[in-house]
Image 1 (cartoon, rainbow, N blue to C red):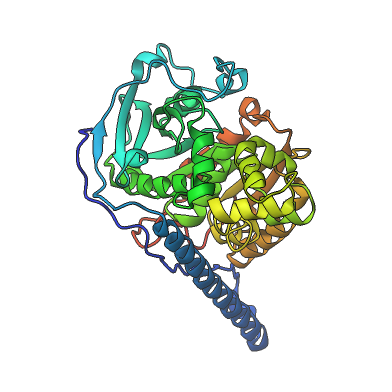
Image 2: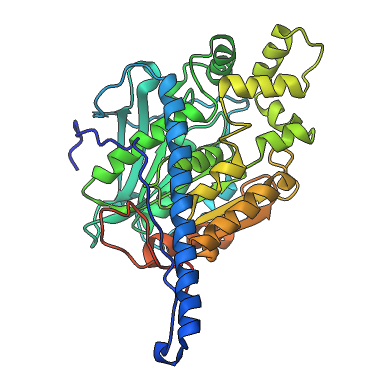
Length: 425
């Protein structure tokens, strides 16, 4: 594929999508008129609820996109700039990680000389003006394929790591004939200059309030990445999945909320209730993961220790709405009807599982109203890359949704599959 400037595709306008549940009716002639009336009433009720949910989702998505625009530098045309492989990736942690057995255990197809058959692309997408508007992208795929268009999966790294850390996953998925994609999130990898770049960006956001380095700015990049991926001739634009671990799981969650072209979503140890954690005094572990910005805020607010008031003010400053209107009880349900598998830790202090009770309940209702309750699942593991990589649960979920699901050939659905539960056999 030639790498060069591409036409910027506008994706930040909310699209109201009506998802209609198709009920099965056998031997309709045997129904009484009363039963028919009830049946059609139920259908109309389901359709109306789906339409109302779509409007709510579009409005919430529009509000979020408007927030993203408020802290954006001048916009530029989306284009591609060739890059080179990174030989010494920057990790903002010590000691530098060198190998992950769990990552490497992700099952590959049994292909002799696999590495020789893989095609690697390194390039940058310009998502906006400025240093952080240069999005580093790594893509792996098989050099030869019998498919004209293939599904794609976007992988997102955790805090202080980078796209190169995900290479074992990219190789595994590429061996299965996916287009496997990874990026450096804001202030990480090639977008960092030293071991404290991300920490410094968080503190600067607290001080100045002009950026949103925690989650939201990277979501803007992922919207632009969707623009690029849907324009590639070798990618089926209706079959783009997104997944990530920890910080990457949060990125996947919010990217799927903001951008409906991500058709299948698997956030790993990332989905949580930010406001719930504040109200129930369960915020400490999450705060400790990026403690420097909270210590800075504590000092600025004249506090002797970090408390829930400090936590609330930091979230409101560096990620407005994260602990209010854009928290999980509101943003997770609007991912429906797209397949969503949330993998969290049963005893994970950063993402307390009790904080998911409300978003989980609301999401179940949203998927039921959309006619595909089996499209939503929550599974719990310890706070580490869980054994689903070894047991192929992660692989099989994405594979089932992106390869085996019925495909709808319509440009209007933007990755949706109306009338079919993706997990139905």
